[in-house]
Image (cartoon, rainbow, N blue to C red; front, side):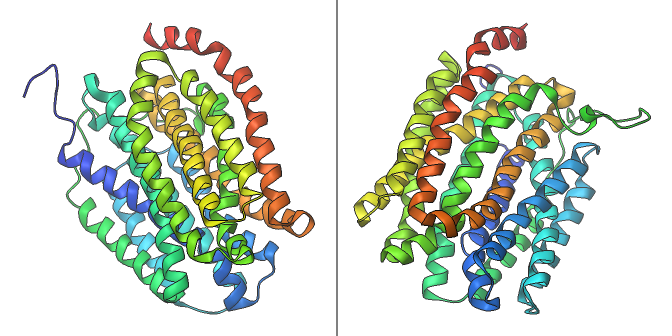
Amino acid sequence: MNQTNPKLWTKNFIILSSVNFIMTLIFFLLNATITLYAINEFDASTGQAGIVAGIFIIGSLLGRLSTGRLIHSKKILMTSLFLLILTTLLYFVHLNVNFLILNRLLNGITVGIISTIVSTVVVFSLPAPRKGEGISYFAISTALATGIGPFIGLVLSQNSNFEMIFSLSLLLGIFSLVIAFFLKFPATYKTEKNNKKGIKISDFVEPKVMPIAIIIFFMTFCFSGIVSYLNIYALELGLIDTASFFFMVYTVFVLISRPFTGRIMDKKGANIIIYPALIIYGVGMLLLSSVNSSFTLLLVGALVALGFGNISSITQAIAINLAEPHRVGLATATFFIFYDLGNGFGPSIIGLIIPATGYSGLYVILGLIVLATLFLYYMLYGKKEGKIQNQVVN
């Protein structure tokens, strides 16, 4: 193998990307349908349905917080995958909405632990000369699942039943456990071992990543309004059949744009991607508030892909690049903690807002939040990008 161009697509990288894809797929597959399930099965209110959707992310947050302090091991990964399967089985137990909320919390904890370990180990599985490229491809596995998960969920909810959705999630969890058996933790893998007495904030999060993590919080908060409520909104508009294809359009445009934006970022920095992406994302949200045709709804899917789809992967690359090698685990956990906070609190808060604004008014508000983040990004990271990059290089 040419040392100047070492192999990227190793067995480890493929396994890690596959497990990451499946974990993200399970989340979006369930979150795109669980609100409707809670309303239909348990006669839950909109607010309760939002809690059912959002509590999963709170669980994921708890999992990431606990994992950030640990020395990650294959044993912890395999145990978490087994517990993921167990908690997925509990979806078939129909007691009441409170039991569903509890199980969603536990299910989320397992996914948070698994995703944090996988996202950290992959950094050390990549050859140094191609690390940026590898992280970019790894991020695509997340972006693909973000589009495919809701698509599958909506199709199954319209043409089958919720037990089929839970069965698919169970099979995906079992498949992840099987392929993880063949994973080898790289010899260079390391996380910071915590032997110090007392507890500090820096034991749980990486301060250097906080500015970009705040940005992804607002982005996922707004995106959760699409994932959790698009199905119900489309039903209200009479566009339920088109809604399932929304996320396929999203996936296609992520695949088209991501390789180009990744290379542009490597050459010219993140700002040249983030600023236009924020504008496109905000415009897409505002357009969603006035959708009146299938074409317009699918157009929104394309705009959101070009916006959020690129913001999520570019900000992840920024977060990892900001961290020192022994802090990559905490940097990854920090980024996804805020990613999860946005996705977690989003459905719950949005569920309380909808009765006052309606879905159309909701998406106007979310669109304005995205556009306002332009200024926030500039203040927290954008205006300092050149200086920060020089510090990272040196």
